[in-house]
Length: 119
Image 1 (cartoon, rainbow, N blue to C red):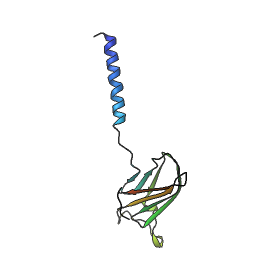
Image 2 (spheres, rainbow, N blue to C red):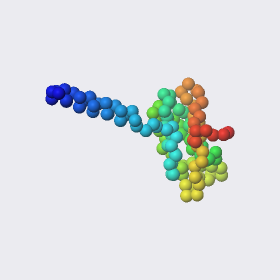
Image 3 (tube, one colour):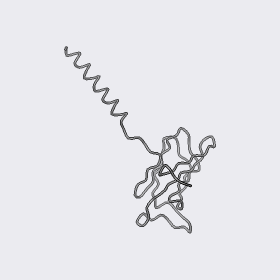
Image 4 (cartoon, rainbow, N blue to C red):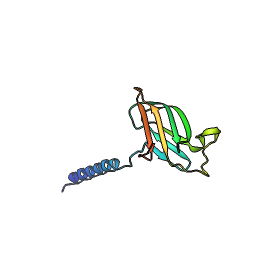
């Protein structure tokens, strides 16, 4: 094997490795729950408006808009329930999250965490 052939094979192997590594990355989730915050990612191709995040079917937080590919990083202490009570991360745990919004064309956007949720 000539030195030029060896270099081409090495370069090709490096390129294939990079492509495979990029394709094996973690998939992005639309809703990710952390102990102290909720992260919502807009994985669609349209802007969401009038966004409401609901935690445990009781606490709520509202946001104006979220562009395609954008994300909301919402601290749980911002979620407010009835009588003005805020979510207390020291005493409560997140068991359900629902995201509702209006898409660009007026379509309803509804996301649930965990994915299957009885209504």
